[in-house]
Image: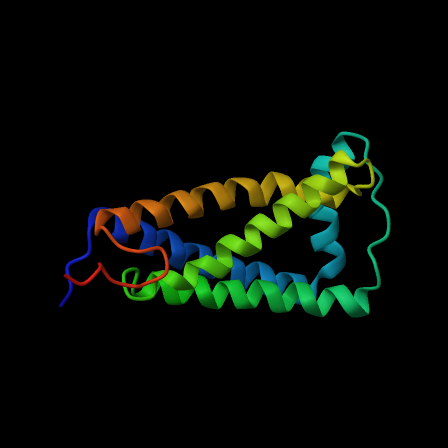
Length: 153
């Protein structure tokens, strides 16, 4: 049995917890899309941004649910075996970076609806913590960003 470093264990527990949260939120988005948009928009509404109407729900709603359940799966896989399955965290990191910087661009361009600010407020900290824990777990075994285990040799 492989003995994980302290940082790998931390990363694993964080990814397991994240995966469960992504799954619950994804299912919440699936069954309560209006409430999800309302909750996401609270920070923006507090700052006076318009709630606005989302783009066609028939397009974005299934994609949002799919994305949340995909990153939930990736996070859970990384959490189950944080050394061997560590690369599964990369889609989670890319997803959080994409959502954060796309929403931030809309906010800075003055085209944002209230929910865009909510995306920045939630996804930026998740991005930073996930990337930091991933990097620490990788460094703790002198590993590579793209391979699961420590380098051979």
